[in-house]
Image (spheres, rainbow, N blue to C red):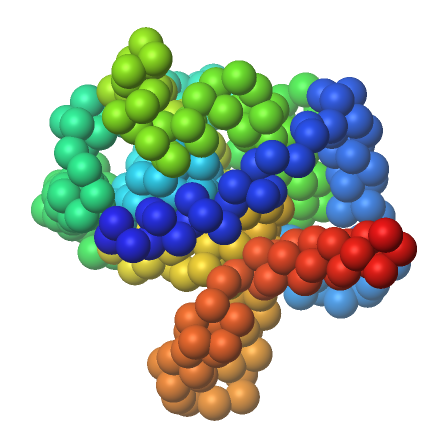
Length: 341
C-alpha cells in the first residue's frame, strides 16, 4: 500500500504544480458541458444514450468523490461504496415511506450520509494505509449485512420494490425521462464543479501536502486528522449523490449498491482513467461502462476481458489513460522546448 501511495505522489506532483485556473473559468466550462449534455439526445437518436449518460452521472460522481480520497489525500478506501448505497437506500426509503418532496428527500439523504461518514470516518482516518483500507471495507460489509437482514425496512435481498414516488417540484417531473436526464446531468455538472473547487482550494492543497508528507504537514501546524475527516465526509456526500441518481434511474435500490464490488468498481475506474487529472475518473467511468456493455453483449467471458484490460493498464501503460496522456503531452512540450533552445 505504501508503494501505491508513493507512486501516486510522484505521478501527481507535476499535475498539481500547474497553475490553477480562475474559478469563473471552471463555471464557464461547466455551463458549456451542461449545454452539450442537454443537446446530445437531440443530435443522436439512440434511445440507449440517455440511459448511458445517467449511469455515467451516477458512477462518475461516485468515482470522482473516491479520487478526493485516493488521488488528492492518499487514502485508499475499499469501502467507499457504502455511501453510494446509503444514498440510494436513504433517498428511496424517504420517498417510499415519508410524504416529503424530492428536494427535501435529497437534503435529508445527504445529511444521513454525512452523519454516517462522521461516525465511520472518526474511526477510520486515524488508521494508516492498509488498515484504513480494510476497516472501511469492514464497515461497508456491515452496512450491506444490515440491508440484507432488515427486511421489513429495506426489502432484504429483493431490494426496495414498488417504485419511487416522483412528485413534481419546481416544474420538474422526474417521472418524465427527459426531465430525469436533464436533472441527472445538472447534478453531475454541479457535483463535479464543487469537487473541482474543493480540489483547487487551499484546503485541496492541504490535502496534497498530507498525501505527500503527513508528518511534515503536522509539524507545520496542520490538523491532519481533522483534514482527513473533512474530506472523508465531503467524499461521502458526493458519493451519495451518485446513489440518489441511481435510485431514481432504477426506481428503487438493491443490496448490490452497497456491496464491496461497488467499491472495487470505483477503484478500477480510477485505475482506468487515472488519478493525476481531475477528469480522470469521469474518463474511467465512460471506459468501464462501454467495456461492460460491449463485453456482456459480445461474450460470456466478461471476467477474462476485464482481466486483460487490467493487465494492459497495469503492465502496459502502468497508469490511467488520462495520466498517460498528460505525461505524453508534457514530454512532447519539454522536448519541443529543448529543440528550440
